[in-house]
Image 1 (cartoon, one colour):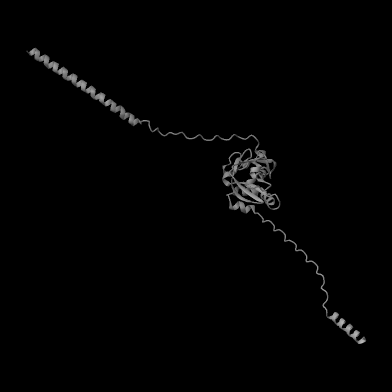
Image 2 (cartoon, one colour):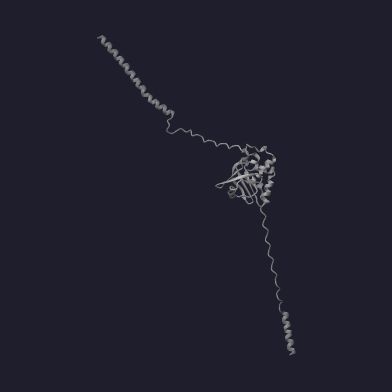
Amino acid sequence: MISCFALLLCSSLAYGASSPPAPMAMSPSPTPTPAPAPAPEYVNLTYLLSVAGPFHTFLNYLESTKVLDTFQNQANNTDQGITIFVPKDSAFKALKKPSLSNLTNDQLKSLILFHAMPKFYSLADFNKLSTKGPVSTLAGSQYSLNFTDNSGTVHLDSGWSKTKVSSAVHSTDPVAIYQVDKVLLPEAIFGTDIPPMPPAPAPAPDISPAADAPSAETKGKGSSSKAEPSTSSSHRIMNFGTWNQLLLALFGGWVMFF
């Protein structure tokens, strides 16, 4: 019995030594952190204005007044973005009165800031702006614009300037650049004594002759043709009277002879 017990004990120990160890509990894998959102692409306003237009005059004013730095910062470092109204070079050449050459440096800077709003507006957004009244620009609350949307065409009114958006140069959030036909002149600089708009030229009168009216040549021919029968009739009457007198003289002489 002792031998059987010892044999059973040895076999159980040998089985326990050969059995694999119990598996260890695995800790949960860490959740991967999401990749950071890509930074928005830097918008170079100088490049956009250089390849379109031509907008060389406006770009020169942006650089000389240092307003370009303000526009670039608003476009790339804010959540609101920017909307810029850019006149072509021909709009500056057509500007006679008032002249920009008489403005101070601060007034010129305010005038250029007056061409931008501190928010991105697509063309569809101007329909809502037309119902809100004056909208402030980057030049300040005293420098505001009025908008009207006429069947999809955006019209701007600064008091001195009434123009419209003729094309979209760039319209991708956060930057919108729209071409306008005139330089925007604010009342805050040039005053409210706005000269009246020149009247529209009257249409040229129609001086073509009427189709049924007879010409002078036709009238002359008609009158001459009518005058010719009367002239020939008078000649016939004169010749007839001359022959009568001659016959009477011959007949009188013949009677006296006999």
